[in-house]
Image (tube, rainbow, N blue to C red; front, side):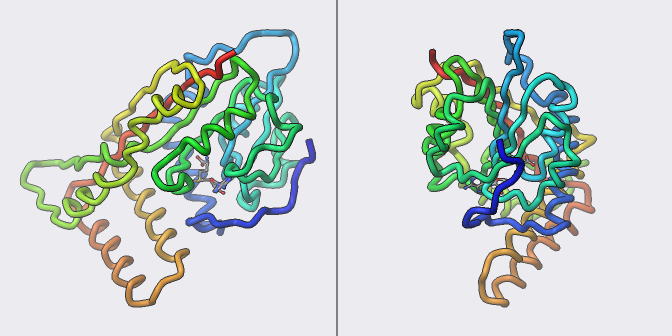
Amino acid sequence: MPSSQPCLADTYALSRDYTATSRLNYQYYLWKETLGYDLHPSISLADTGSARAIADVGCGTAIWLRSIAQALPNDIFDGLDISLAQCPPVQWLPPNVSLRAWDLFSEPPQELRCRYDVVHARLLFVVVQNEDPRPVINNLKLLLKPGGYLQWDELNVPGSSILRTSHDVQVPEMESRLASLKQIGGWVKRLGSYMVECGFSEEGCWEYGEKKELAQAFFDNHLAKDVEMIVTRTQPVADRDAQLNAIKDLYDESRKGAVLCTPKVVCVARKMV
Ligand SMILES: C[S@@+](CC[C@H](N)C(=O)[O-])C[C@H]1O[C@@H](n2cnc3c(N)ncnc32)[C@H](O)[C@@H]1O
């Protein structure tokens, strides 16, 4: 595969500067400590004597690929993303990693079809449109060999809750933010059944609650993402300032001993043979 390609038209809601890139890299380590793995243990890769092919779609900074490619040096890894602007130079990644621009809302080119034993995706929450992941699942399915695995790691946003150091901590802004989070992302709870509807056999979906020790770190990381989204979006300055002030209020409230926690979900399914 070519090691890099020009960027496609980029409609991403978040930023691609060094702060955004650092946020994603840091977030990867928080996820790794929460899950304890890159590939879910239910994925058993057959030893066929030849290299297995694994794709990370929406690969971001390529940090997941870097980790897993080092652990599985005899396998082949492709990072696919609408923009490779947040990846390091491919020369600095393990030699078994390639990068390629691909818009996951378009059908994959012929050479990528039925190529992969595993397709991994993480945090496409802001990418999925109209609360419906099926167009994405169908395109990811085209990448997989029959019998190949899809692993999708996502945030269960409506499953969010407030963790407090004590019942007395009053956090009205956080309560109000929680009420809005409950209204979005219901599709994540149905991710496993959507995969089945799209022709996969479901291996399972696993939910990971926030570890108390990581709760503040995840909360701060999510606030950084919210700020990024507000600043990236074109909107009247007054609206933008009001939203940035709301983020500051949430952060100030968290210093009283409360944070919003959002469970992580990992869904694994297999493309039917
Ligand atoms: C929140 S980031 C997650 C990155 C990475 N998976 C991680 O966990 O760090 C979402 C990623 O999806 C990519 N993306 C957005 N729209 C896309 C599209 N239409 N096709 C492919 N990738 C897209 C973005 O460029 C970004 O890298």
